[in-house]
Image 1: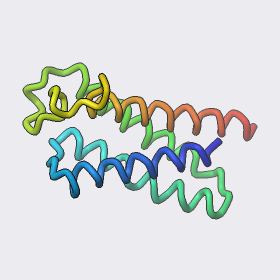
Image 2: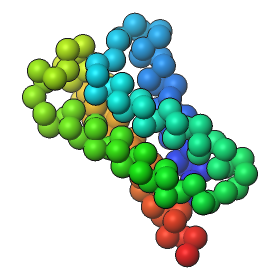
Image 3: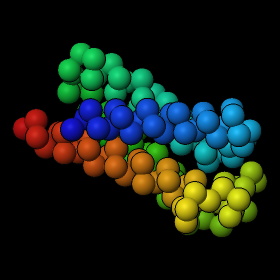
Length: 121
């Protein structure tokens, strides 16, 4: 299951780099904090997948949970905290804003890691 989590972290990494570097959307402070949870998670899950080491999974849960928490704060706290338009209609993909996409991604990563831990025991 943690292979799926690894794939989702790669998708999140490339999407955040695409929006930041190619489209030129500068991330707000809360988006940066989510990236602080996602980028190390991508690296550490890559190492865990390469080594087939499941001892990392509890630490991955902490990073994914903190990223999910930050995304939920960004969704439910007034948009005045976001000065770069992450929660505005200009950042909508279908009907989802960027914080909603982050929350869905972190929740899926958290779920995959949770089931990988449960499968281990």
